[in-house]
Length: 309
Image (cartoon, rainbow, N blue to C red; front, side, top):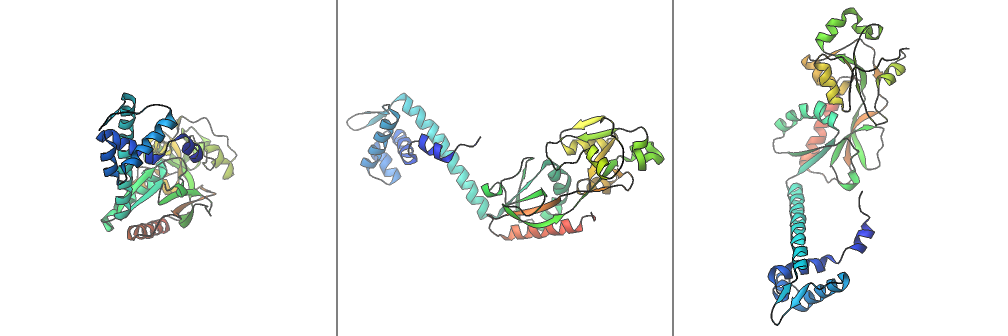
């Protein structure tokens, strides 16, 4: 759970005071800490005193010309130093990423593995200077929080956190390995009328289609038998189908690579038009860069050249 910014602010001491404390412990001197931070020795002393009052503990043993941190204060300073370095590294990485034009793409596991990665080779060949960061997650990406520059998102436009640059509809139809289809023989176009093995994908996403949904929507009065295999991720379902374990319900865009290489074949011509569409959604926060423009153009053309849905 994300901390409430207001409650976090109330519970934390002044960041300026913590920086002063960490410097004072490293130097064991308020004067040298002040020189490092570009402030007066009195300012550092006041910041440390304010921390002691706020925390209700003594942080330093003050001597004539030096200050000695207490053991508890030294432990706190070590933790602060570690986190300050982490913040500095994150800021540095962020700055370098923007300076070099890194574009972050967000996609689900299925879309990244089954559609994007097989085609990204072509983009990197055409644009070797472009720097791409692919972030894969099956939870929704928060573009307003800057989690990605653009995402591949299934749903219905418009979106509140970004603009749909390109979109593509899709079809759902049964697929199986060539060997499995051959074993079905003439029954492959109406496999539900005989013995068959269904491979299912479980999902909590409301827009996901189950076998039950597919049969109902295409108008076939058939109650699917219990699945022989069930996965909680779509790539696993397809790999099992490619291995000849049964029949999977394929999304056209996501199975096209396997249809092209012949490791999967379509069973019959019955298909369902998906209600939503796949969208390339650009964050409203993302500034234009040459790499971004090239990637958006390539994705738009790739969507347009996909088999008709």
